[in-house]
Image 1 (cartoon, rainbow, N blue to C red):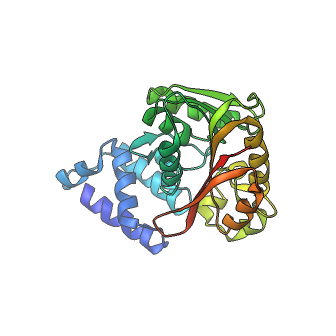
Image 2 (tube, one colour):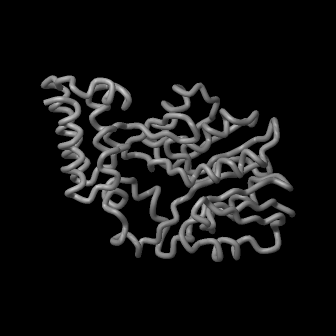
Length: 276
């Protein structure tokens, strides 16, 4: 079987099962099976697949047809121009989260102390360390997630201190200039309606906040008041329909509150400065 035929057959199987972007997915999986980049597939479309590549490709297609996200099959995801390793121990970084990173970069000053809470793969904290002159600490409640983040930091040569713990419990009061987080914000009541790729494969500890989806935000606002210096920044990624409830948590202790939209026009990032 040639590369071209394998692509056509793979794309057709994926399309029949209503997998999004079937052709692109087939290309990514076949390139991964061959340990080549995607342009190679078109430059060598008549090349015959050897038995090992065919077996790998078939297995990857089977996994994707069963619902496993492509990123967990290939163990990679691009974020802010860098390739991150991902496993089922961490959420797959989304393009929408780049808005959170951009909002943080715009507010970080050289020498600032920054904390990324719930770092997962490390995508946010590592990116901020690479893009700014800040000193970055990243925390997570999951040791397997921190193992993934540590590997990503080493590969990308990012200087990030990693800490195991709940939120910012190990951070001294009034010691941080910028607190950034993409917290769990999916209400438990929404679990059944999630895409199977998310519901069945991504880590629930990083997805679900509690019955309402606001529970972790409540804790984060309290933590931010404790660890941020005066005039320090709190930056949070917002979940669906969370902008109102999260804004209400801030009260009168915060100023320069700004809600930033994503490319779809949805409120995606909340930025606020501690006033007292």
